[in-house]
Image (cartoon, rainbow, N blue to C red; front, side, top):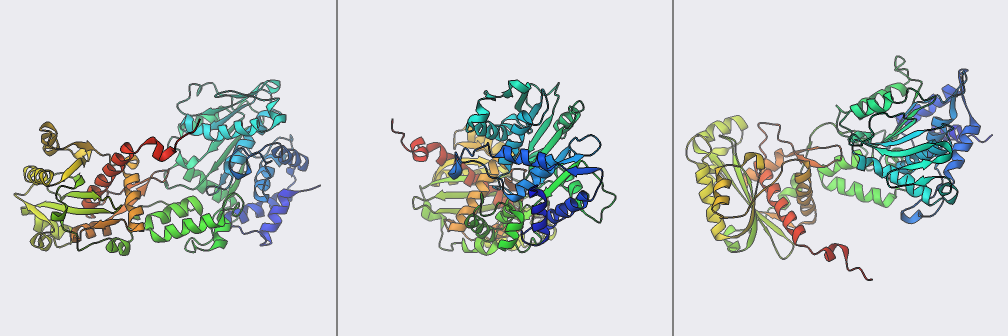
Amino acid sequence: MNDPVTLYAERVLAGEIAAGPYVIWACERHFADLQRDDIYLDLEEVAVHLDFFKLLKHWKGKWSGTAIELEMWQMFIQGSIFGWKRRLDGLRRFRESYVEIPRKNGKTTIGGGTGIYGLALDGEQGAEIYAVATKRDQAKILWTDAKMMISKSPALAKRINCYVSNISMPSMASKFEPLGRDSKTIDGLNTHMGLVDELHAWEDRLLWSQVEDSMGARAQPLIYVITTAGVNPESLCYEKHEHAINVLDPAMEEYYDDTLFVYIATVTDKDAFDDPLQWAMANPNLGVSKGLEYMEDQCRKAIQLPSRMVDFQVKHLNIWSHAAERWLDLARWKAAEDAALRLEDFAGQPCYLGLDLAEVNDMSALDILFPGDDGIWRSFSIFWCPAEDILERSRADRVPYAQWAKAGHLRSTPGSATDFDFIEVEIRELVERFDVQELLYDRWKSSSIVQNLMREEVVTCVPFGQGYQSQSPALKEIERRLLNGTLRNAPNPVLSWNAANAETIRDPALNIKLNKRSARKRIDGLSAKSNAVGGAILKNKAERSVYEDRGIIEL
């Protein structure tokens, strides 16, 4: 009988299919399992399961309307999960699967198809299938894929009912729904199959426990995890990732979990990030759903900007990232300096002010950003530090504050603490000289300066968040403009020092923000600049016509 599961394992171990270490271990595990007497690979079940996918059709992109054809690696995963049985009772061996692959490798397709199979053909009367995520809207992504695949298949559409938030099969009294922590039906679950998409983004372990605990009454329940790598080593996903590797590792005999299936596609050499062979190891669907040209483009961008390298490694090579990383390429940053820029040449021109105020005796910064009509954004930085604290700051931070102050790159304010009145006077002078559109400030460090300016209606002051949601678009706009040469900075050694210090950290969605945890690595100028750039982005977006983005719809 045809055995596509073993065939894939054979080709991987023969070196005919590019594979990383964990896929190789998974294939070695498969052959070891074939020698056991207590379990067996039910090839009839494998054939039924894989044939079922032929009923499904793609519903978006260039393959819309065509039948789904599983690739060999997908057959290995699906055939293993549903084909391995316990000889004692004939029930499924695997009760949990951990599949970790990069983006654009068709994981949602097999995830959605698995849910439909559990609903219709898994032999479980009254089955409850859930697409699970921390937010119900996120859970609906995989669930919607399943719903659309059903609608494209006449054979399934006749037997399965699809509603706004429910898919049901009356003949089996089964249902398939999206489920999040914010769902109304979180209690009273009787889960047969839980489909967990993008576990790396989960911050809440409670939902996992609730789904797992709700499976006790089912004969052969399944938690089906399909995710990409992430950035949080404290997360549930990383815990599962590490356990999964230990289960596969032949040297870790003490780790034994016979109910867990594992497939983790990644590289053998993370330093060879530009090697197409490494790309193929990490991306089993390279050349199918994920194009080689796309990978080349993503790699090229990663080489040009350091912060994109982590994106590339996590999203496309499936490498976990744990630490803050350097944000800027200093050679590219230096190339953006324009010694010909003079602030007095911009009198009366529209600009945005980004303000980063010190706590007590720290350095404060202001960025003055002029978005030019020629598409080039030009920027000037002003820094302040208490005069009596300059020498102490020099010793603590090991940089020449005194020299910077003498050269005019750093302005000293009277006393030993930040003099907000002094800074306010200078901001008022800037408002008189230039057409200031907005002053963007950190809402958590607003002071009497902002209160006075707002009360007297000197300038529009807008709070700008320092979290991922606000900072990420601004930082990525800075990156983009550094890359295409449309950002020019007036030279300032304090700003250059800040740029050399700048590190970013990421959330599970790979949004970035500046890392402010290091007390000595000052980045005040970059914080101020991100505020100004963020304000310019938001203002430009608000003023754009909907037709500029969408075009005119003809009726």
